[in-house]
Image 1 (cartoon, rainbow, N blue to C red):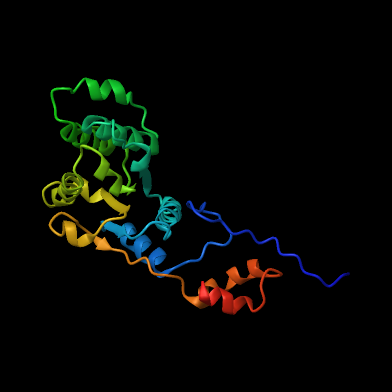
Image 2: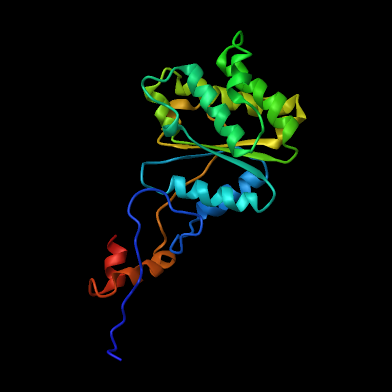
Length: 232
């Protein structure tokens, strides 16, 4: 025995963490968003990049699925682009919803058969006529990277208005009580006070005591691991 301890601790720099990532640090936001969405309350997580928004989404979705809540996770970065028009964005969102809920529907045919309708109206009809019919449990739709809409023809304010309209439909159509949205991205709430709906989830930094396990990864790399971690 050499007496030397070799740490197998691995940090992950950048990108989101898998649900089972062993060194995920739980923050108050994890509890706040989980409880709110479970109760059917709309939520939004607006913060700077690389602050853990997507990891929070992944972890929360998995927790909700264990509660028999159907979850859809949409990353707008994978849909939106400078050459993508409004119709294609809404069609992409519809396809992601169908995929996330494992709906057996030919989305392309369904979309094209309703060309006389505006793209936004087609998405609404899809949710009402297909999603609510095929899925009999509560549904949470996470939409991540919504700030990507700034480079598209679809106004972010218009899109937020659509989400707001889904919430307002609850008053006259009880089936909408089963649908809840969680929005994530780099957005200033003050810019969209009239259209943002729901609970703002504060994504704060790590509490030092909660982050202490991360000090293990500094073993044999630095002296005074806890002091270095505190500085980080």
